[in-house]
Image (cartoon, rainbow, N blue to C red; front, side, top):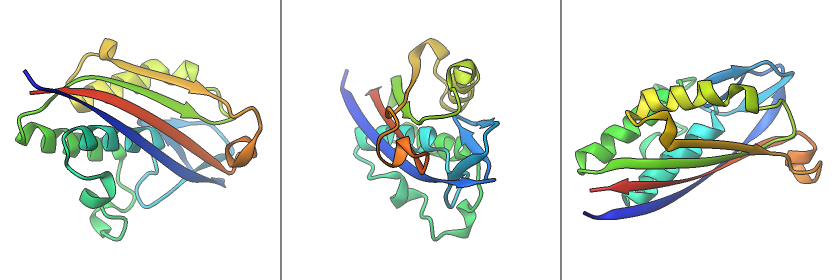
Length: 158
């Protein structure tokens, strides 16, 4: 058996009165992430971790922000497409571990729904999907609520 580890990172600007989608869940907040798709920073970091582990470049290579097909699209669809790319190369996902960094809103109540969304998109059990959140202690662009950051690592197997 061959195993690989991947690392992903994503950042999006926060804008007033914009939808805030994280892990496929729309959060109730006065600001939201801005981007070409639904700007789901968590799922974008996970996609990059998976693609990187399989040596399949990155999310921007496969889902260009200049392509109208991806404008406003749910990042759950991007995650499903990423899993399909891995599957075509014989890879399967072992686990995903992700971290969100933002000041507000609180993420903890939404983690089970996010895990279920990711499980549905990837075909792996929720117990193999870890999601954590932290603040930036009011420092930098995250602390000023100008942006949101996510990191992810994954294990894939062949």
